[in-house]
Structures are given as C-alpha cells and as structure tokens.
Image 1 (cartoon, helix red, strand yellow):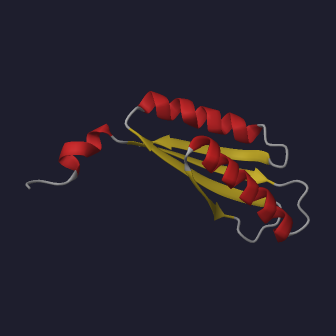
Image 2: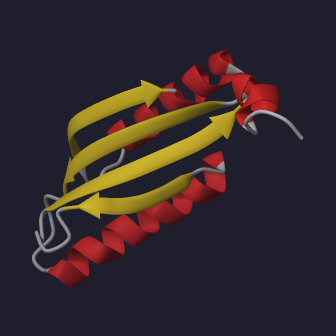
Image 3: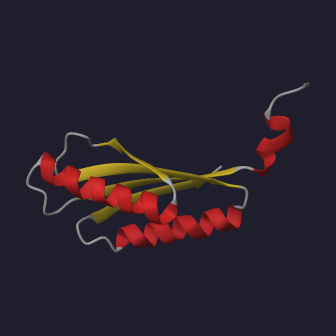
Length: 105
C-alpha cells in the first residue's frame, strides 16, 4: 500500500456540520433543560440518522449548544438534509434558535 489512506477514497466523502445554539424558554432547572435536549437529540438521531451531542452551555439551565454531523458522498444530499434539520429545529416548540453555524467539508 503506497501513499496515504485518503488518496483513494476521501475525495468522495463529505461531512456536514451544524452548531446550533438554543434557548430553552420554559426551563426552570438543569433537569428541565436536559429533558428537552435529550428528547430533541433522540428525535434528530432517529429521524435523520445523524450524530448529535451537547457541545457547550452544559451548566446553563436555559441555553444549550448542539453539535450535529453527518457523512455522505453526495454534497447535494448533505445540503438538503442539513436544511431539513435546520427547519425541523426551528419549528421546535420547546426551544428558540439563537444561532446556527453550518459547514460542509
């Protein structure tokens, strides 16, 4: 085997990343916040087959920052799915979107 591993297959791989900051308006405690975030993460994983984790604001009881990622060989599919995920989260009744950062590598 010569060269790097990526020479042969990385060119066809795309990674989509979202960083979404949310305000959980009805949360009165960390327990309330964690229930909302856990539910949202579970629904996103099930519906879109993505990786999702809380990446910041762990101790803030009305704020959360989620990191989401997915891999595909098709950039158009990635863009369309990231748009669907963004729309889905913006319709979430238990949280308000404060900011979204998006990147496709």
